Length: 335
Image (cartoon, rainbow, N blue to C red; front, top):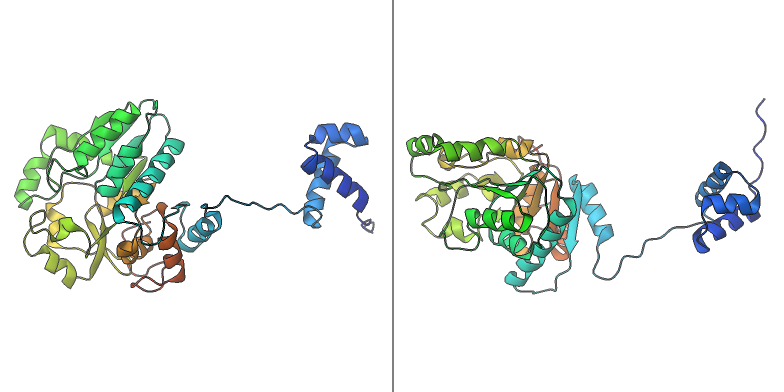
């Protein structure tokens, strides 16, 4: 017959807890002082927590959103959410700067020797590169995952971002020396036969992490300038229900991949390759992108999201125009 469990020694539990948590003594020091075994001290500390004698709280400084991040991670199945503080009505340029700085900090914290880092294009990623401090990375490659789009002199041009990030990391730059969207499928085949293009495209399958923006169909100027994409594509995307894109791979409000004629004209990472990258880090925020971000999270492609607290709270409330966020249905392009 099992022996009845004795009542807890509330004095001893309180004494051990006070010495450990308030006086800063080690478990070994407490064991010697109170003539207990070290395993006994460890068990007492755990019991004190179980009984509520010790209650551990975390009080993040103002401007930190640890609880919101935890809710985002649970709600959307993210490995990590990182949320930055912005002021209501903050100009878009300042929002991009703040998000870019947070993304640079994330990269500095997580970079590992020997990694292949993929980089797409966009103004927020440009802000990340500009904010990136010099880091002594070992045997790291920065890979251009999408051909050039927009004017080559623009700060957000993909090749320039790759060169800039590689320089700050002391890494090697692998460039995809081709336009992101070509005129014909035949032209795409010719460019894919180029040795330099082949080398970059092969490395896409070896990426450890890729940093991407999330584009909104309605607010992305590249999609509406009438020059960067083939004529009639915008109308085709609208008719197909596209709401946003990651690296020109478009998805609808439910996170389902939208196939269009441009798929055969793109030189860059495919939706399937995005799905297979170990870690996809999306950097995006702002009210004009809430709908696209909500849809992107339904694709299952995004592992880490760096955004602002206004956008995060809107996503959690389900207030974006796409409806309630969460796992999508159908055939998403992501994991």
